[in-house]
Length: 262
Image (cartoon, rainbow, N blue to C red; front, side):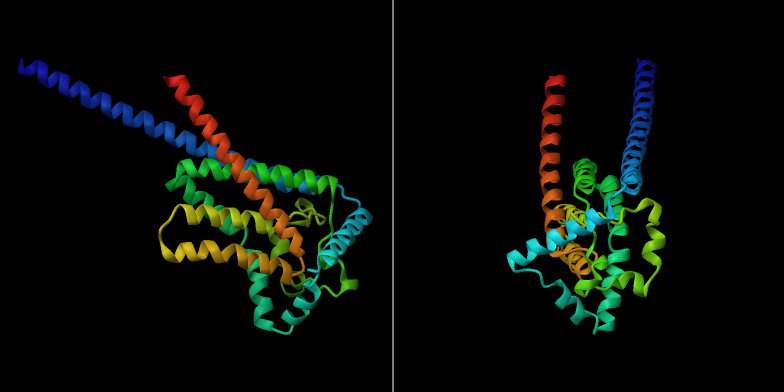
């Protein structure tokens, strides 16, 4: 009898170990799959933007249309704000650094954190990122817009190129569409990451960071003459809408899985 109990116990332990190894392999495969999906999406986004053959004249005309729209709203104040900022050397250096190093490092680090600590949330924000990228690509094709730094006749100055070559190295011209100012996914995706951080931590420091970081990026896009005010608003609206769709997709997926397993 004792022999049988021992044999059964050993079998249970072996079965449990096999199950742990199987679950571990499945988890590793799922993680690698998610990483590959995001990596491919980012590559496609950059490569696709680089392939867009925007008409320079059309992009400049559309930029003028956006400026005129802001004038009608009474919010075309970017040239005055930037001229004031240019007199503050430390401020210009700071916003240049935020624009260069405060986007992709924040996006990638946040996604890695979500993937390793909050897998369910990662799926939602990954989907939102991809959906907003698709919408952005469509707009870039149909409505190319030159950034304000190309509108020097209005008093704009390209502070990033003037003070640093880092950004052009990080984003080579071959993979960059110079006429994709509308919408600003710099602002939109930083807002998306801010929402992700705020939702998934109770730490006051990181919650404060989650609120201030998108605002700092929004200000940096304006002071570096890479985007207008409405570009950031459009980017934010698109990513928030994409996140809402991502939550609906996740809810639908969970209901489908529940019906399938019931």
